[in-house]
Length: 577
Image (tube, rainbow, N blue to C red):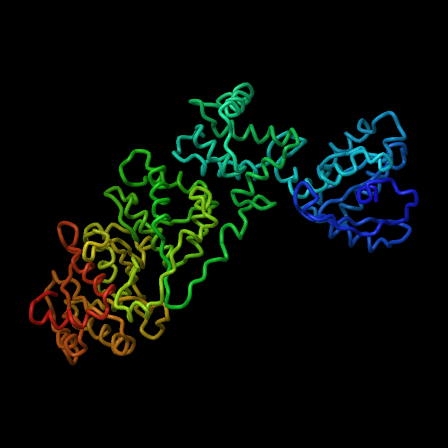
């Protein structure tokens, strides 16, 4: 009542009315709902209900009343603990009222209590009569909710908690833009602007580094702040009661009150993908990913070794890529993911599972480093495919080719050949690490496009909508197996004959002796009848990397489906295909 009226009330009821302090009159800019309790007017059940709903609890005792002080530990704290979850204790503020009636402080008695109960955030001595520290105690109550000590620091051990160390370590790594293990002045200023909207003055920067130098060995290196020094500064903030500084940093980098990355940070709600539209990374996203790759390619060999890849994903809570990635994108002779392969894998993830891509970009700090509102700014949602067909042009850069064929027809070899691997190199890949996807680039009329190949499992009766949704269909049969073509013919007639999806027939294993297919029409006759290009001979059993011309043709047909019939007609006369 003293807080609201700013004067001491002469007549005090058993229980004050519930009030809400508006956000605009509080330092933290949040509304505060204050609920009083009176044993004379309320039941134990009502008290328990209020305790369970509270974000913070103030236990008021009289500094001139020994029994009142003793009741803090004998009654109130046990009662509160019995009505709150042990895993998420509600912060408690001890309030020593009536300080105007005594000349001594109660802090000597209260300090052992504070050390015993970690849920006690602080103790404030005040006087409702003199209005001393009244507004301050509610400020501390707000602060205990918004900037709690519990998740950050263990007062008994005088150490930062492991979850806090883990979160701040990720923040350091994201902010270390050149990955040299040191935050230089430019990186520190970027960090400062990101979190607090203002750079540090040169002298302030030096003062910060001098504090670290005096207290931590190896806290400063090459005139930059090391991880050790960065963590020390935050311990210092916490120990000096400046929890809000650390919490501001944590929240800016996406952390919630439990020091987990917030779901709204990882999965922005602004992205909507209508049917018949796809998702791609935009130019700024590729620039960001290029910088991430360069940052971790320490030996500058344009490939990421297992150690470099592990370092890159150190800011993730788990390893996002398994060994199958090495058989999905291009790698070097040591089977390390190349620069092109790295971008290809991100392109694949964006196309197949954009929510996962947003999550991954969140771990890397995309929105912070790129100064965007969220990861959604990295994504382009393409226009409806039907509009592309109407306008006879597309702005898309990723095209999907679903590959059908009977078991043993050569589909896997066709995928791996796209990544530059001949049969000899394919044979050393273990079955468990094989991938049903392959993605790389192809050039069409001088433009770089991504072609995504997907091998569809050869179960003819259970083809899903995903199996059928693509930009071009590739039907692969084994030219040396007389029974292989029939499967391709059946898939085409049942699923694609009456669609506008362009199709291409691939006569795989062309290095082996060609055998007459046991089907009513020859593959060439079948293609002519259904206005498809003639079957394309293909083999991956070569001394060098297999020829990639076929993949350029597939990409061209995917980009210009309406031209495929014309190309087919021309090919009969000019041999273009």
